[in-house]
Image (cartoon, rainbow, N blue to C red; front, top):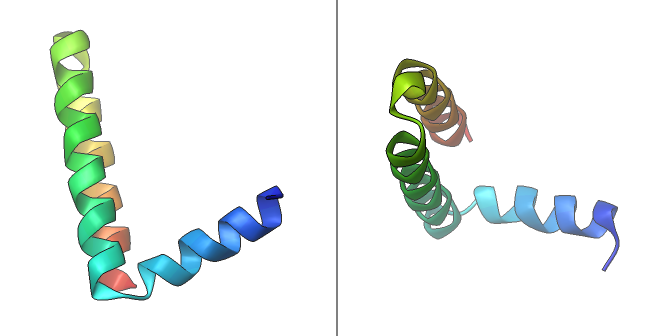
Length: 59
């Protein structure tokens, strides 16, 4: 599968409720892991997580 097809598939998935829920859950998991690995950067991690949630809610 080439990159263009993967991007199209991901964009299509974000148009569904289940896709947005999955993306949000994965983002939360990634943010929690990043906070455990690098606690001194938690404010930046929180900011990135909020931006991702905003993006998912918009679509």
